[in-house]
Length: 91
Image 1 (cartoon, rainbow, N blue to C red):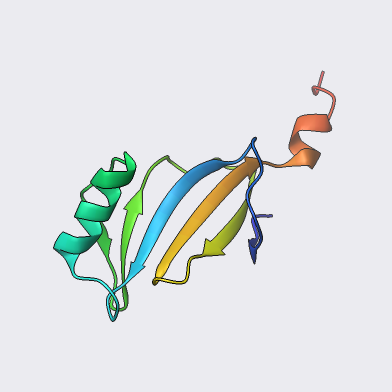
Image 2 (image 1 turned 180 degrees about the vertical axis):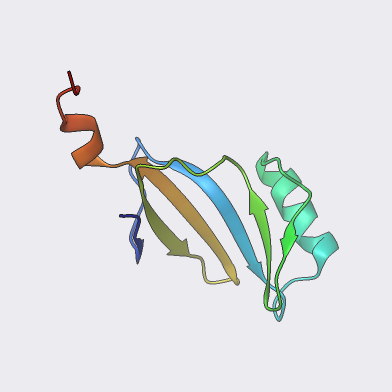
């Protein structure tokens, strides 16, 4: 099961998506922020309250953690689930 929790990232985590709250960011300012930080995926999924810029496709066995930055940006990290990676192959 995937879960979303607020946590800090580890070296093994990948940035899966970056969210910008519309009340804090314009579309153009969000794109400028992403470019300045070296991120890609500049074609967002526009939601009622956020711009969502996907960086990687979600992995089916991943756990997800979000880190809310003080400026209205939320970075969602994915990490392959420990249960999936420790299971023996089915024969």
